[in-house]
Image (cartoon, rainbow, N blue to C red; front, top):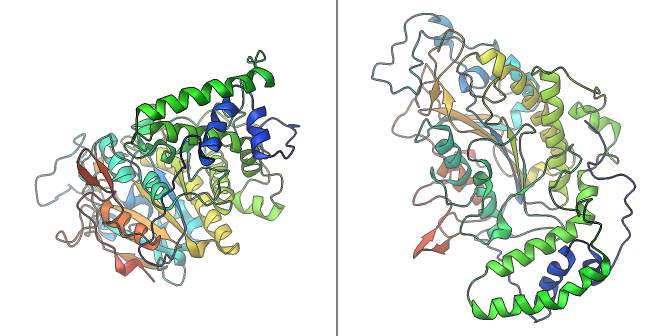
Length: 497
């Protein structure tokens, strides 16, 4: 794990004019990107941007922290004394339960001990103890419900508002509605788990029917090539500045002809914008992703001040903390440079041994390292945003696709529980130090089953804080005015300060 930028060292970043840089960019990228600049000058038609504000915003940007595999609310945030009292007794739900893998063994007490933190006295598990330092900034929502216990569908529901593919992610909607605050960086950035992608892969941050420039840009901090294909391949030495520049007139003619034959089709314009952004990122991204200018006390806050050269192959908390904290620090650097939406993933979909939150076999083994690393990184990110004055207008959302059952599976694990789980939010005008919507005494379903919280309500609330009416941010597709919240959603005013 390198503390400095993931891009080649010694690369000269000489300031150039926009036109000169695009002409000189290798691999044909500059020629394609130049077409977008010519569009602004009237050759291909003026580019347009969307900016929607329906009321004064309290937030400008969002971080979504996604725990892939289904994090156990009752082992992390939602303390249930009844499970401690009745541990090992036959689980009696009072109704027939549709379990994903028939994980309906005896009641299983929380794997870790809980204790109160902060002035709010919020009970947190010892495995997420670092969050105790910021718990009075957090608003917990304990009565979240899903629609399915299937990972792929439930993950899409949280990411896009629909439990099937083909719909834009929340980050794409926010990019579409508000645009970018920095022309040299994407509006929507995704930082996946370093081991691979979660269920659905790239569909979780796809722009679907929205213009393609609003899809998430994937970055892997710490890798030699943190952003794929941003720079020409080392084997492309046959590409010269002269050959690249010679392609521009041909590309312009082809693009102009294509656009003339397809009036009203914005895909070419979106593609050109993407290439133009990639050209600008060649200068902006290395600086944003490097930690060389970070002071020692900030690196220490994230636990990145003394990184070992290697780790044992088995999963461990120190390794997870470094990887997750690295993504959190990169997120802060991107946010302060104008990125609208950063999505951080913990957990992948690569099976055994588990490197995700899907703890069917052993909650302590699987959740332990992931939870410790997540808590350290999240607490550092919140404190860092706070000390820089960014937390006031940045929303942090912690989510997962569903929860886990209060009954045991195989003695040490827990089955899927789509009937209730936990989200938490902070910053951006969200009240801190509160818990909203309790679950029942077992953490099985909402205490008030007639008034659960759904992902549409979380999405509506976040859009509201960004100055957007969730019912008015729409895009016409196949004859339907689509929106992030479909035909659902209510702003949760109890969460708003």
